[in-house]
Image 1 (cartoon, rainbow, N blue to C red):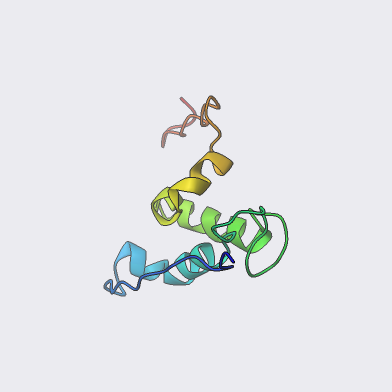
Image 2: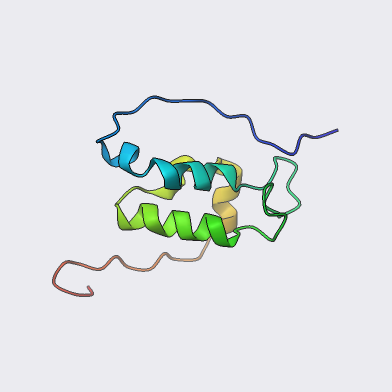
Amino acid sequence: MPTDWRAVTGLAVPADSPLGRGGRHVETVTGHLPPPAGRGLCALCRTPWPCGPWDRAARALEEEHLPVGYLLPLDLHAVLWPPGVAPAAPERPDGPA
């Protein structure tokens, strides 16, 4: 029987580092993932993934320039970034490219 939770690891990071300051959002992003067996539902919310809490936390991390892809299991990358879909061009400080 497949488990409903992904294996996790704990890391210590300085609280005043960018990752440390985003700790609450990191916990949300890593907690609100679908189980390894798939099914496309958040293991906590039991709603379609990406769920609302995951999306809000991921956006908060991106605002802090912390790429959410580093916190996401590789099998979920294709769900968020399907092959062949070009990501939006990043905005430059002086406006869009």
